Image (cartoon, rainbow, N blue to C red; front, side):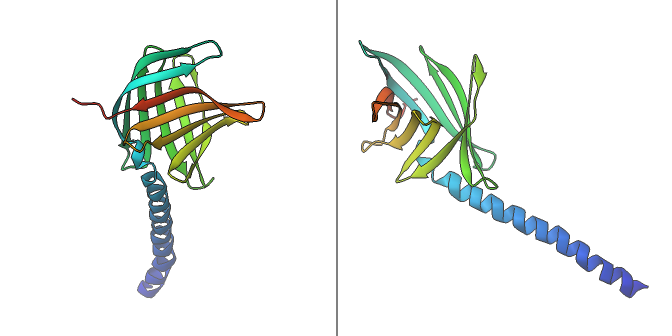
Length: 165
């Protein structure tokens, strides 16, 4: 009888430890993917420019970008005269893609992202996208582009140095 109980435990232990192995493996992949976005993390502040056909508007922006949940999420909190935004970025192992989820006063969204050549790209649709990268000076560089007449044109740009204090 004792032998039967011990043999019955073997499949149970395999299921428990096997499930834990796959969960740890997924967390490792997610962690590696999120580490690629470490260039975004920091306390940033400076000029944010909006480009319109007739003029350019500049306001001050403050962005705090932080890791959360053992570095499996990034939160981006933007505060400016033009926009207040809370964003969550994560890597979905099942779908093998990043998701960029902004929350603002009038709603929320969920968009796919990708990491290529030191840049994080978020695609809203075939005609609008965001690009995040680090500038050569070490600044947080974010800009939005629209596809117009077959050419990508910036509609806003933030070039934010590390904020002191």
